[in-house]
Image (cartoon, rainbow, N blue to C red; front, side, top):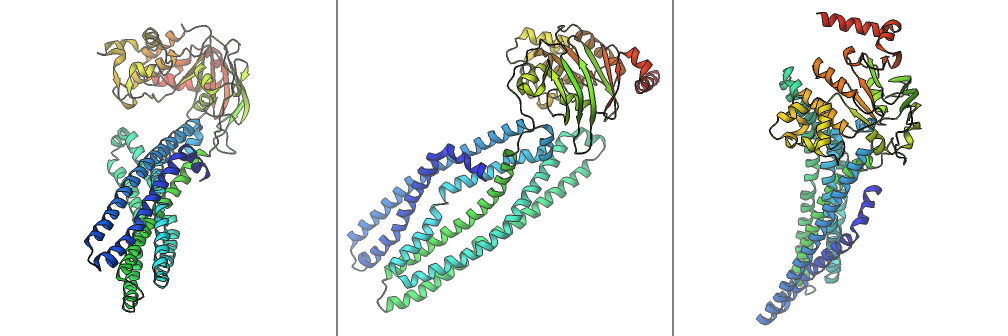
Length: 572
């Protein structure tokens, strides 16, 4: 909780003035029963209309001042809670962007979305209640008890007994509910995860006719969430009835005992009415406290989940150096190994060099570690051993932003964002003019279909670029990478949706890049990499071959098998 509480430093004024105004409102509220007692004991007893109107005017003034104080507190509470929510969301989102893909996977994207939305909302609500009610409610309880003692100490014992009983009830219910609130959050994560999977995989679900099964899976998760919420609701629902029973019993005892004191002349009728009013005020304040316990318990669970993200140390931290690509070789890997799980290596002992102006091919079977190598280059993940140098220096010395400007990856799954084609392409270079964009589109073999669109670069793309074909999306992603003129362009099987002719034209166009640039093509197709200056062959996480197409046909059995299998498929 310390991390979350530290954010209060941005809202010191709101946290001071908000409760103060609410406290002022509570003070005026506590004075009203005393004025009412005077009206009954003096004004009504003596039938003095002027006195009654004067005291009634005082009550109206108290009410108006209370309204002003309450509205001012509401303003400060809104500023603090909404500001707190905004700052928390920014901090969590910023932290998520710092985490490695491994760390994001450990939390799961659906859980992170829930933490950014629902959990922050819970904390927001708690902050608002903290300013508005967390001081007011206890003050009214203590104030009502104090006022009751000033009127009659013996009858004030009824107040004290009611408070002690309610405190015991709340303690028991709070202990029970704390566990279930955490269970509710876990179930919400599960519902979010299934929802996200189903929304992203609609085509696959329909292709396999899994709609009914997925609906049932979602229903099961929703039902589990419902049951967990019902358990919490049942426990929370006991707060108010339990409080009401105790307070109403207290009022009955108060009236019973007070009637004897009135008859004996120890207590006036106005004072008894004041005591009943204070008992009612205390009852309402205790109900508010009960609800606050529910809200704060939920918020504590949510704050813990948010804090777990904020306190996670980023595994990948950049240096301060700026890439100045003047050294050759451009990229060197020396005995690089990496494992996603401890004791298991996805890649092991990888060594190769990429020189400026070269086109390098990388091929291998499924799960051989090609994508792992690709993620290591821009430091999306860090190697567990070995060293990677870029322009003669270890990757760790460069700032992450600058390194990733010089090493651009185009993944197999084309990711585009809602907005115009121009806006998407400028991810590669925010200051790029239209001429640069068209040049990149031409190199990526995307110029023709973009020109054919009615609005050209201003064509709107829906989320994920779903209004373009798979091949078009891949070419737009390649163009986006080319706009930034990276020193190393990495195509991670990012031409898989292209036909052979378009793929060939793209490879031919990439040869016209600056001699200072290099291209790494990761592909399943021999045709895509056979003309590369050097081909790297991987099998089961190891580099088993390195050389030109002709050299590998003579020296690498695994490469020969790949060539034979693809040749047979082409002949069919």
